Structure formats: structure tokens, C-alpha cells
Image: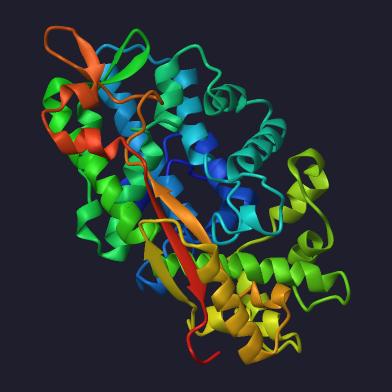
Amino acid sequence: MPTNNKLKILNDPIYGFITIPNPLIFDLIQHRYFQRLRRITQMGMSYLVYPGAHHTRFHHALGCVHLMQQVVNVLRFKGIVISKEEEDALYSAILLHDIGHGPFSHAMENSIVNNVSHEQISLLFMEKLNAEFNSSLTLAIKIFKGDYHRPFMCELISGQLDMDRADYLKRDSFYTGVAEGNINSERLITMLNVVDDKLVIEEKGIYSVEKFIVARRFMYWQVYLHKTGLVAEQLLIRTLKRAKELNKIKKLNTSKSLEYFLNNEISIENFNDETLEIFSRLDDYDIILALKEWQHHDDFVLSHLSEMIINRNLLKIKLKNKKIKEEELKSHIQHVMDRLKLTKKEAEYFVFMGEISNQAYQLNHHSINILHKSGKIEDIVKASDQLNVKALAKPVTKYFICYPKEKL
């Protein structure tokens, strides 16, 4: 009987032809847990701002594996010993690093589950797959958790110069058309090295690192924290919370998977195998279908929140550098209560404030270290002759307030 060829070549719009490195990666990609990522948008509600941003977590994960293959080749060429087992574990860990993302990425974490992060769910999926694949993911899980004795491998999965960031900055820049985010990931990878099992960048790669950090700042302010995408995500969070509230009184029209999360209070403590199985069937389509139904619901709040997202008729949002006064919030709430005859609790679904923060580079957190020709190693902030790198290490916080436009 003919055997299935598992060493496929795929065509990626960013990198061109990319290969699946081994049969395990092929089998993981084919698994329904991973195929679900085809139905999870990489950038949440950002397509309401950037019409091209419809790429998925599936795209991104494959791109990360491709970059990790390049890393392994570069480091081996430079004499760094990486065993076959470690190589396969790196590929598996980076492939599955985002498998726990819920519909529209981060909106899920703040609405229908109680502060359960996608990293925690990713780990649950990886442990489940490990049992299914005869413990072949044991080392990958160790690296993913940051528990492996060779720290550079953990940094390649989750660090300030990891393959996750190396792919998503370049990919998101491509699909949004925001050229400022386009980094030279190949140049960065070529400059990687390892000293005492810790990741470093060779001195001649310092300008590529500076560009990488600046690009990250641009992408956060211009794309990931764009005010329109921000208000859309906030509306989705509030729509799901309202749905959960109403569902306790009368069942809403929705998919079985979403209904389960509306019916139950889910935290990491009770995120069991049954919950994981139902979560694995939940994707963006469940949410969109629900919103299309709910916009015709007789509850004013749920119907209007749903209609706002479906038809991109969003709230007005103002970004400020200083904290917004409570009086301003109360004034808008009272105005909505009077105009629309809503209770204070109902009005607060349409009027709210919050804050966003951006720190392009974090000091003392998996630092990006520069290896000088002399052998000296120092943090990019000290090694760089650009003042703006030091400035980008400081967190910048902005405050927002959202309220209805004149017509609702």
C-alpha cells in the first residue's frame, strides 16, 4: 500500500516555499485541534480597521516553524550542539504555542472564561496531545513551560526575540499593509548565537535589533492598539458578558459550544477534559453566527451591541495621555440613561473607560543581549548608541473613554 508523504512543501505569502520538517509536525498539523486555528483570526477585530487582516493563527504557527528551522540551521553552523530530540521539540513547541487561543484571540479571556489565559489552555492542549502521541511532546512541553536546562531554547519560544514575534510582526505588517512593522527576520536569525546556553545577538546585528524594537512599537500603537480595533474588542467583550447574563434567564440562540461557556463559570481550576473538548470546537464562526442572531434579540443592550460589531457602527472613542476624570464618565452615563431610557447598569455597557500600555522592550525580562567581538555581553539598551532604544524600554500608558455617537 502507498504511504502518505508527510514531508510536504507549502507556499507561504511571506517566506515562499516552506517545508514540514518531520512526520510528527505533519500529524500535529493534521490534528483537529490544530486545524481549528484556520478558523481563529490572528488579529482579532483588527480587520475592521485593516481590511486585509484576515490571516489566521494557522498561518502564523506554520511561519514560526519555518523560522525555527532557520534558527536550528544557523546555530548548528556556528557549532552549537542541538540534538535531534531537541530540534523536534523546538518545532513542536513553536507550532503549538498559540493552540489555546479562543475566538477573536484575547476577547475570550476577558468575557466567557474567568481570566484563563491562552497560554494555560495551550499547555492543556499540549498535554492532551502528548498522551495521544505516545509522550513525543514531553520535551516540547518542558521547553514551552521554560523548565528546560538550556534557557536559549525557552527564549526561542517565549522571549523578547522569539520566533513568535519574528513571524507575527512581519506577517501582520504584510496583511495590514503597515510597512513600518516589516522586520528583516532572516537577518536577525543569521545574527543569533548562543553563549553559556543563553541567546545572544552578534554585534553586527545590533541595527537589525534596533529596527525590530522600533517596529514593535509602531505596530502596537498603529495596529494592535489602534483605537477602532480597541473599541471593537471592548464591545465584543461586553456583548459576551451581556449574553452570559441573559442566558441565565432564557437560553439564547447560539452554537452548542458557545452555549456551554455561557451556561458555566469556567476558571483554570475547573477547565477539565470535557471543557477542553468543547473549547476545541469553538472558533470565530460561533461568535459571528451568535452576533448575527443576537442583533435581532428583544434585549436592547444585546441587540445594539451585536449590531454595532456586525455593521461596524462602533462607539466613539477618545484616547488621552492623562487619566479620565470620573465626572466625565458619569456625565456620559447620565446622558445615555436620559436619552435612551436605560438603567445605570445598562448604560454602562455603552459608556466605559480603561487604559492601554505599550512597552516595546522590557528590561530584565529575557533581555536581548549583544555579543561584542571582544566577547563582552551587554543588554541592547547599553550597547545601542541610539537614545530611542532606552526610551522604548519605558512603558507608555494611555487612557480611553468610549460612549455612543449621537444616534444609537
